Amino acid sequence: MKHVGLFGGSFDPVHVGHLRAALEAAEHVGLDELRFVPCAVSPGKPRPHASGSLRREWLRQAIGDRPGWQVDDRELRRGGVSYTVETLAEIRETEPDARLYWMVGSDAFCGLHGWREADRLGRLAHWIVLLRPGFEDRLPPPQAPDWCRSGTTDDPAKLRRDPAGGVLYLPVTPLGISATAVRARIRRGQRLDYLVPEPIRGTLERADCYDPP
Ligand code: ATP
Image (cartoon, rainbow, N blue to C red; front, side, top):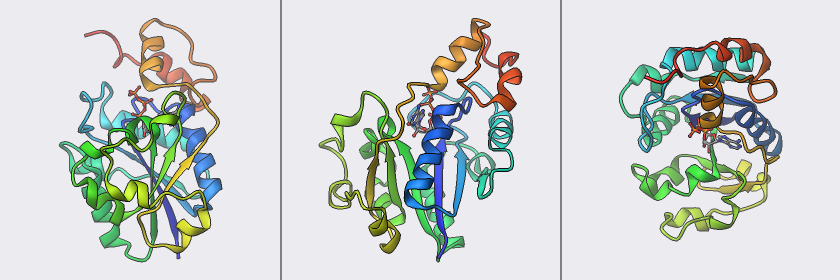
């Protein structure tokens, strides 16, 4: 049985907060594969500043040849608003035997009740909630679907045994880095050392897609 982590987001652009959290989740649960899933348009956010192809390319360069890590660009190919429920349903259909773990930051998880078919999301995958500074004590929010409470566990072995519906809150190394702050630095012409992966640092520092309109 293959254990597959799926990390969705805008990645506008990818930064070391994403990569470090993903690595720690993969280690903790013992994932065989980790796939970054850049969205076309996130349901809850404005359209990303950088194009899908740029965001995908930066992710590819950031990951490099790390074994088992890849970019899954199905949401970019599908276009339109990217609903996680559609993405997970598609993957389940093509890979019925894989265990799927959707990874999400605690800030995003706080709004899960507003996601399309939130009740169904717990039947399609396990959920690894990456605790970001400032959001720990609000989880799960009162409006969260029932599976968010009933599935809670801190035992990764339980997740590996059960088909779906587990929720594991993972205290990853707190790195208060956001793509918003990275974009602001690019606009101001500031350096990005140690905030973004080195292979894409120079390209991002010169990126004109984050200039003010
Ligand atoms: P933005 O600032 O543009 O809103 P972001 O930095 O939050 O972006 P996203 O691409 O929206 O990045 O994030 C993808 C996923 O990664 C989300 O689930 C988000 O919560 C999580 N995430 C982002 N930054 C971190 C971080 N520093 N530590 C842990 N998780 C993170």
